[in-house]
Image (cartoon, rainbow, N blue to C red; front, side, top):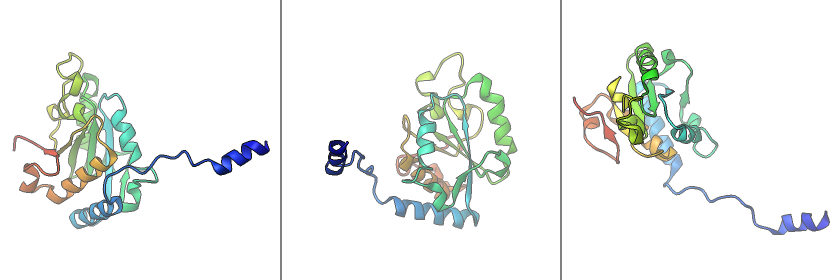
Length: 186
C-alpha cells in the first residue's frame, strides 16, 4: 500500500492538455454581448436530433461541460420549443422525424432561428440520397446558419452562434464568414 501511495505522489497527472482554440473566455463574452444586444436577454436553445449518429450531440453536450460552460455566458438549452430562440438541428432528417421537426419549428415564437449543426444536418452527409432520409433539414424548414463538421467542435458551435447573433436577419448573414455557410436561396 505504501508503494502505491508513493507512486501516486511522484507520477505526473494523467489529464489531457486544454484544447487549442484561442481565448475561449473572450469568445464567450462576445457571444453573451451579441445575444444581449440582439435579444436583450439570454439565449434559449432547443436541440433536435433528426436522426443522427449522436456524434454531434456529444459535441453539443460538451458545450455545457466546465471547460466551455455556455450557461455562464447566458446561453441555455430548453426542453420546450415554446421557450426557444434557436432551433439547433443535428443529423439528416429522417422520414419519421419530418413532422416532429416541422411541429417543433412551428411551436417556436418569433424571432426564431434555425442552425444546422454537422454535415448530416446541412446536406444529409453520408446518408444523402438514402430512401430513409430527406437529406438536410433545409428540405423541411428554413435554415439560417450552418456549422460544418463531422462533428463540429464545441468552439465551432460557439463561433457559429456568434455569427448568427451578429448577422441574424441581416444581409451580413448571407455572405460567408468564419467558415460557416449561411442559408442559401434568399
